Every structure is written in C-alpha cells, then in structure tokens.
Length: 155
Image (cartoon, rainbow, N blue to C red; front, top):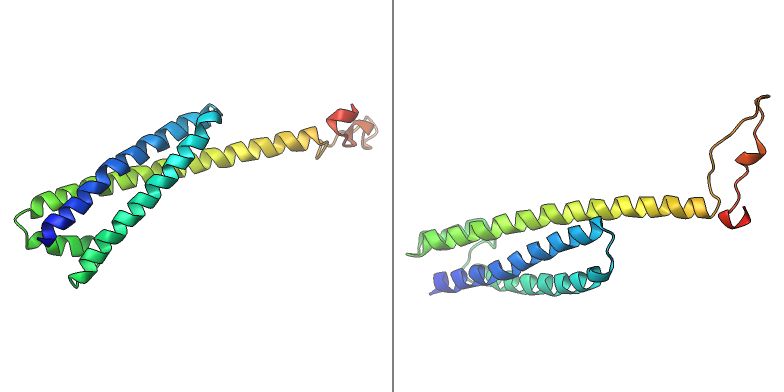
C-alpha cells in the first residue's frame, strides 16, 4: 500500500518538474535576448511550481519517515526493495533526479547570465553618471583635462 502511495507521489512530481525545466529554458532565452516582458510571467509560474514541488516533497518525506525510513534515496530504495513495483519506483525516481539536475544546471546558468547583465548595466550607469574615466596624459606626462570625470549630461 505504501509503495503505491510513494510511486504516485513520485509520479506526481514529474509533470511539474518538466514544466519547471521548460520555464527555465524559456527564461534563458528571454535573458539572452533581454526580453523582460515574459520574465514576470515566467517568474510567477516558477514560484508556484516550486511551492507545489516543495509540498509534494514534504508529503513524500512524511510518508518515508512515518515508515521509519530516511527521507532520501535510501528510504525510497528500502520501500522499493519490499515492493513488486520496486523497479518502477526506482525508475521514476531516476527520472525525477535527472529532471532536478537539469533544472539546477539551467538555473545556475541563468544566474550567471543575470550577473553578467547586472555588471554590464552597472558599467553603463557608471559611464552615464561620469564615473571612472580612463587616465589620459598629455605630452608632458601630466593628467589631461579630459581625465576629469563629467556626467554625460554635462558634455
């Protein structure tokens, strides 16, 4: 009985996890293209999927701990070892693990894209505000008047 419940809980995670992976891919495309319009909808949907997956993970963990097992792969393997559906349970768990790993890698890539874009934007703002300008020297070796930072609006 518990094995069927566990299998159902694992299978219930596959569709939301796949949708999360698809959203992360769409987010990556939007970030690369600096297309901010769809990002708000993507973020909202991602948050709701993460909440759903956390709730389902908690149910799975509660089931395993109620059986006196650890709430990790070893606990699932213990249930699978006692079940005629053990092979299917482990197969579906592997599907979830692969999807989770793909989501994590894509999320890290998206994070790096965001960091690069923040750095570029920061540099652009600094230039517009008249921040650090390159040191320029005249023929005598003294600092050129061009080296004095001025805001772009003062040019």
